[in-house]
Image (cartoon, rainbow, N blue to C red; front, side):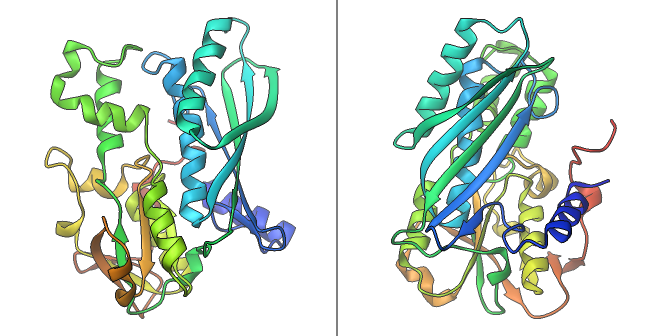
Length: 306
């Protein structure tokens, strides 16, 4: 069973208008809400991440979802399920990392329980005040596809970490040139300013997602929700020369943003790269002229036995 199939079952069973985007937009309350979980040995391994880095990343991936909606992140709750061997120092360092990632976002509560492995669940709340909220279903033919930052760095960092595991940030075996890739994986940064620029200045419907499951996955999710084709030129996607195009497209966990907006809107914002355009046609993505209606076989599946 694949994650998207499970989500569709839940959405159908609940007959919910809110399930589909990474955040639920509760318009009557003026808030967006999201929840994300990280599970030891599925999303992270303690032999290559410190408690501080784990706290930082746990918070940042949830703030990224709020940013992908266009909302301003405001509050967080953190729930931890922890094995018996976890000590006070782990908790202190974890929350120091969470606090640094949160910045002006307030951590207001959570829960603690015991478990066999470390399980982290974070809920984030954001406000729509002064901002227009995005939806995957809002991409329209003629819109330009724009992205923030470089892509593929996090997946490259994970590749290095798996070859040279150590809770110490940098070891000689990893090589100095890999430092930025490791940083991108262990301590990603939510694109708050990119989100703010778009959401505060746009006055029409638009689509936006983060690239937590990969750039190509974000593109095809928007394409299917909007019933359009998203056409992309890989030569225009910002990436480090050391990172392969396959990793750029399918690597995941970069937490950059991809948005589909009208071309005439672009003069109102800065620090973006145009990587393609939205076209009428079948629901799917066009990569360098080749059309794909499904890319699930290229993506990581949490529910698949390894």
